Amino acid sequence: MTLTPLPPDYHPDFTRWRVAVLRQGEPDWVPWQDGVSDVHKQRILGHPSRGVADELAFAQAIGFDYIIITSGLTTSDEMTGAMTVKKDDVYESVERRWANEGEGAIRSHADFESFTWPDADTMDFSAYDEADRLLPPTMKVFAHVGKVFNAAWWLMGFEAFSYALSEDPDLIARVFAKVCAIQERVVERILDHRCVGMIWHSDDLAYKSGLMVSPAVLRRYVFPFYERMNREAHAHDVLCAFHSDGDINAVVEDIIAAGFDALNPLEPPVMDIVALKQRVAGRLTLIGNIDLAYTLTLGTPADVDAEVKERIRVLAPGGGYCLSSANSIPDYVPFDSFLAMRQAWLKYGRYPIRV
Image (cartoon, rainbow, N blue to C red; front, side):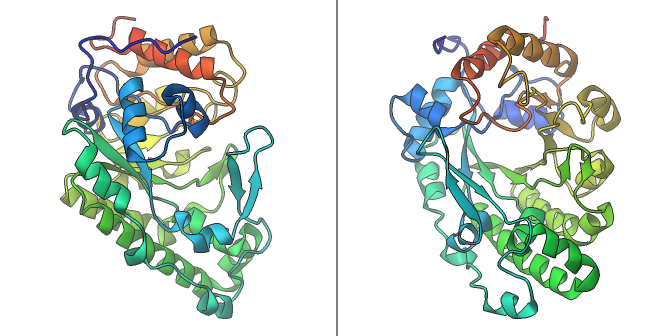
């Protein structure tokens, strides 16, 4: 399968995101969002993506209205140094990172004091400066930040984090406060750039079986910080989306109350996106639900076409829905499946919906 040209009348335009995400009716097309593997980007570009200019070229070739720039605590040397790194078995250029499940870098108040915490004001935001210069007025940046809950337990290790919730809540509070102070400053720095159209907070809260911790923990330590960051973003007329894998039905109302405009990726089968859209109609836009566990990875291009068609048919009328995978497009998604998703979007995603 090859990359087919965009329709002559299709032009990347972030306006369709504002219409869809703010639930202002139907835009001209169903917006499509996905974080795409560098392996697939290279197949489109003919060379590795080397920065903002290449990200822009990739987005314009695919039809995305945005580019993604990732920033914040989890990109820092201090955080990545506290995680385990392994080269992919297939693609040498791909690194897998994960946190220690037992104990992490911060196990005590002494560890907290001695840990080298990154300074948001010394982080590199030059990609946003470049995007300010290069992006056409109709395109924006999705600033990928997030990682409040994840960053805290990654630093501590999930087992140690879980014990500390009961045995040392003061340490938990200190770690969250420090993480959030850094991330809030990152958001402030990002919002200085006119290219930013959406803050994308990615923070996995759940397994398929349910939340990783009690909702009370998230309500105490996580959502209040997101509410502050979202309030600041909205003051700059910037949209806010939240991403979490797994079954997060128990905190959907908290996500809305924190001021998020949209929710992603709505992982099947634990997130019934049709029922959820009825539940949150007019209050939250839904992004995602194309199955990564089977359809995009093990299914045929025909399977991908059928699932995209069905999601658009059921969810897109009236607006409030954006197409996306149920996580992202990693390197292990067959390239033909990625192209099949794009082709189905081009076939079925124009308003008014006629499928």
